[in-house]
Length: 340
Image (tube, rainbow, N blue to C red; front, side, top):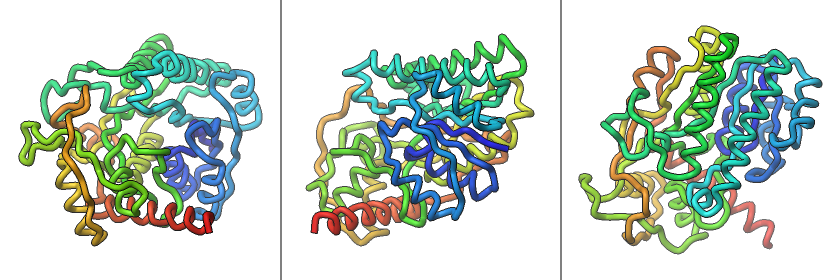
């Protein structure tokens, strides 16, 4: 059975592809390499010892996407492809709406034309906006606060409408909280360009000396230490959640929403202290003004995923920090060798 993975060379996509291959699925990747590198294909092959079909395809090009379906017997799709920077989405909203929404619509149209109706969609906890209550469950109100989050919420609504129109569609909408860490091999992980928007790669770049110090956005939140609290989940646990959804998708009733989070919140200062403990590296930081739109506390209620998918986050914060650092060291050392 062939599984199509859109955006399969990206951070979460590549880890999911590894888990799929190790579970003996045949995998087809489409990725336009906007936020990724074809080098990851070689690394996935090195980790798994298995081959992958790869196509450099933009989902806005329906003809190219249709060609992929014509070449393979695809049974299910895991859809990661899309732009994902909150800050960029605020500055370039049309870019995000065009790419993320039209890409999803084109994918669904090509799936329907090829009688493929099983879809796992990469959504985000950003759809909740300011939490109605904590922990956040799937019935909490949604209120996306930026164009990126709104593209996720609109895509969810499109897919919900689709399942209402045709009962053959089976869709799992997976709302991620804060994925961090990297594969234990150190061969794949998150590698944003410039100064990262996300905490763990920011800390990792400071730890390797690529950045001078960490900026902590806000020290006056109503939390135990004044810094923001988030639900962090190891990217490998997150990847395994997609396999659980794939196993259960035929039994879903139309579209189902699932939170993928640990159900625990860690503050920024807790993350820094744990990172320092695990790595032995001191992280210099300064507390600066809050970022607009950031909430004080956000963490998941993952009970529905636990019960319905049989999935739970297993890796602890120590492992998240260690694996993120090992990955960043690997990148840093590779760059140093290249420069020499």
